[in-house]
Amino acid sequence: MRAALDWLEREFTLPVVFAGFSFGAAVGLRAAYADDRVRALIALGLPAVDVEDRLYDFEFLRECTEPKLFVSGSRDPFGPMGKLEALVGTFADPKKLVRVEAGDHFFEGRLKEMRVALEDWVRVTLPAQELGRPSGT
Image (tube, rainbow, N blue to C red; front, side):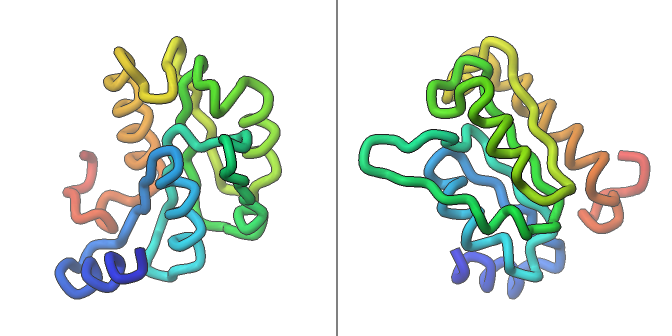
């Protein structure tokens, strides 16, 4: 992860927004949260329960003050209703949790809703100029 951030910094002049899915989100959040080059964090399908022999610890997000978006399907067995809300509730602000209605762990049939949630949050959370977009887009 850090090698990827180093490469992005060398190749581009835009700020980095970390986004990861499921296990990749769990691992990537830990690597990205304290890196000054990362302006925001996005986790899709974040596991809120332990999966088989994988134990997840997100204590570090209690101190992370970068903007955070969590998107999960309402039928995701790894982010059950109540568990994910309670977990995200322990994280430092700013944060937002979006539930995609009838979405499963892979957002099957609900990719458009997931994409819209991401786009809307990025548009509101990060200034257009910072992301290299013209204002108003």
